[in-house]
Amino acid sequence: MDGLRIHGSERRGADFVDSVASGRFLFSMVMSYTSTCEVPGLTIAGADTGSFKFTPPADAEYLHYGYCRTIKGIPVTPDGKPTPAVLAKAALEHASIPHVTINAGSRVSPRLPYVATGLGYGGNIRTRDAMSVQDVLHAVDYGRIVGRSLAPLADCLVIGESIPAGTTTAMAVLYGLGHRARVSSSMPSNPISLKRRVIRDAFLRLGRKGAGRTPQRAPGEKGGRTEGAPGGSAGNAAGAAPDNGRRLPGRGRPHAAAPPERHGGGRASDAQVPLDDVAPKPPGPGSSEAERQHYMYRITAAVGDPMIPFVAGMLSSASVSSKVMLAGGTQMAAVLAVASRIGYDGSNVAVGTTSYVAGDKNADFAGLISDVSGVPAIAVDPGLDASKHAGLRAFAEGYAKEGVGAGGCIISAMLKTNAGRAEMARAIDAEYAKMFGSRAA
Image (cartoon, rainbow, N blue to C red):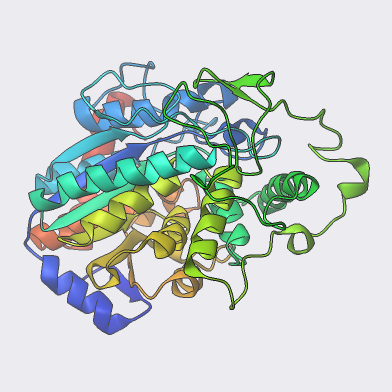
């Protein structure tokens, strides 16, 4: 189809496209949050660091209402470029595709009906574990429940996300699971050096505690200390947190206080340590599946975010009975890496993204998806380089590139209606003009 390109197995990609063409699509937008986004310079998914926590709910409200209720205006970059939700909304409305909002760890709840999971938001991986192991287990289980419930409602369940700095936590999880990932960014100039420093600091922190290098008890094993449902005793990926630790914001439960930062979060002697030298080593070929799964849970808890295990759970259950399109960029590679340890039906799965992510020379998107799984990746060129609006041309110039399931939503709209790239570009132009009114330029 005009504007679509398949990466990976062309036969599997073509089979996926043919199986869902003209079918019923349902878009699920998963909101989440990681405090890692508060590291200065890591993301521009908002006007400033204080506004990042409002970006996921504002994206959800914009998709639902056409305007936001938790903030004035819409989510924008510091220089005013709009959220990729404008692309997703234009596509969903053009093809009359329904959508549902899911709160899987958003710091701020949206002012609209949504599926509540009760998951807390993720901590800053530079200074502490993102979640406890039990949090990850809950996220996977809740994701399975939601995925099992939504899958029968459509021929293809499309799953997107909104989480500032999600590429950094995705890269950390991928590295921790043995994939030397290069990830994309919401900026034209990818702050990859800063991302690597943040992840290096997280791995050094884990190394000082022995996480990922020494045997640990799995969740639920006798003698191990795990965290129960919200309000239970605290635990984390490297062992139990002391009860007199600082409380993790948004959770109301104790968490270990982080050591004082030096030189960007680590010790002075750590400043030049290469990332590859400090990355945890996954269990070797002789390990059992149980050991590999337990290791995955610990790494995801330590350096991930709530969205990754939740969407992995959705994928696991939904792919049994429906086609599933993971609508996003490099974050979805981390979802696939985690899902590979809990199981999913790869014959029913594809990744959908924009050509701006697939063509990002800093990221090697196609190679990453191929390294993590055998599922095909479908990239769409929305044709925004020719838009009359500078705010839309910015996507083709490297800003945002993807988010809020934009690529997957455009692909879904094209497959449902047989619309070409030019038709979708006109729909996006019209939505942008409506959003900004007379200020559109």
